[in-house]
Image (cartoon, rainbow, N blue to C red):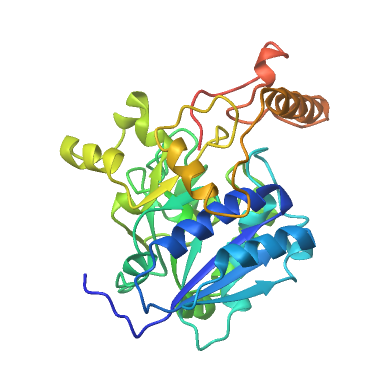
Length: 334
């Protein structure tokens, strides 16, 4: 698709202080691949960042074609929303509020998670025609259909068919006019208040937009699950397309709780993540074995506490099964 250099790309990201390094890598990869002369409005939602982290992020985003804006008033709005995955921050709920955070004159935005590396000009994704869709995304690798394990619970309640796509919301192209006209944010928050399901706002997007989410080229959201032969069997991609997705993605999304910055990660694009990190003020940082064991101990304690509380359940992908025999853990992960 031909680029439109006179149009401004609107990108929205959200992070807390624990995700300052991944945020820096994501921004650096966006800026590094930005077509010269293509304007980028970068909206960063501060979900609890220190002044030092903000200053470092501002250094990463510094570029003549980039305008940076901080959004500081969302943290309280998402504080009481359900958080079911220990590796996913409540910052992800920020995407639901994007239509209200931007002026009505802005009718299109791209939401990105912060655990990814961009490998192509993000303007090419922003230019994809929305047509009649309220959003566009890529199927979730771990649960590609609403009826898949860890898909959309009670999918028939929301007018969905079993064979319909269950989308990953980590790379989400949004038609803001459609979201505002249909009060999609209100519908999603109402869903979350009633359902409290483990997929959080991603499930909400899939539930409240039946038939209104278009499918992007999967190279815009290569997910960790795409490398699993077990999960590949459920994907609808021909072998040649899958090979292209694995070898030459346009966006690498480090889904699941195993991140490239974790000690011992063997993700194929881990080296690329650190190469981008070394182009930021965080250069030279590497995970330590000691920090890994401390983090894992905290994870087990958090999930054990959740398990022991009345009515609590162990999360999918949990490590608690290693400590609490009989806990319900599934092998698939989002």
